[in-house]
Length: 265
Image 1 (spheres, rainbow, N blue to C red):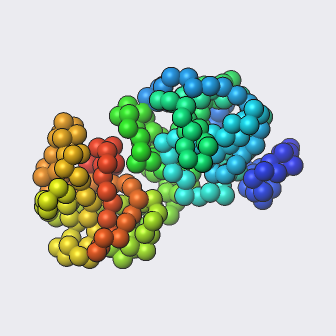
Image 2 (cartoon, helix red, strand yellow; image 1 turned 60 degrees about the vertical axis):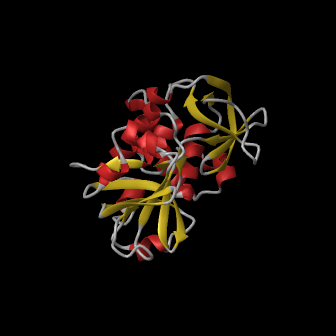
């Protein structure tokens, strides 16, 4: 029987917590979900005392941990999942460093000590998170994207909604999400450079239609990855990032990992 009273920090309805707990037990019993591509140096260990929000938790020693590498659109359900998976369990924290962010949280990839299951990967596989635009390590990004892809193809969680991926040809829908993290898909119409910025355009009206921007200093990284901006013309791509309003809606590309060239997916 589900012990709902143990989930007090999340304040999630009992029926959601119970169903999430059962599903999580089944997932963990299926096998090891450790994301080897994100196998960074160990930055600490601890036992989870409470869930703070949909991507943060507090350890028994008072440290607050922010799950790195993901964005969480469905906060209520993700919080329930974290409660079911983490509260009272030991975690190993991995990352490039243990420097806290401006809110005092330590960004980390959290791995359950007893099973080796990575928490970020589990949220992604259940469709409760999106891969962030801030993952700089290519192997880690590929591992997380693979987990996200599993949920997308199975239409789990966020991916049940057919509008979860925005259509680049509908700039109004994207513009409505200013300040939000979005995944946008479409065919590149043209690539133009203006000063130190390259514009990857998905429409003919540059003041209204959706575009992504690439700073001149970032272009060499795209070229090294075989994704020279000009080579994207007439190709269907998927991009992710925070939407800004600069005439039309824009997403700034800071890393190659923000772009997927689409084939049969």
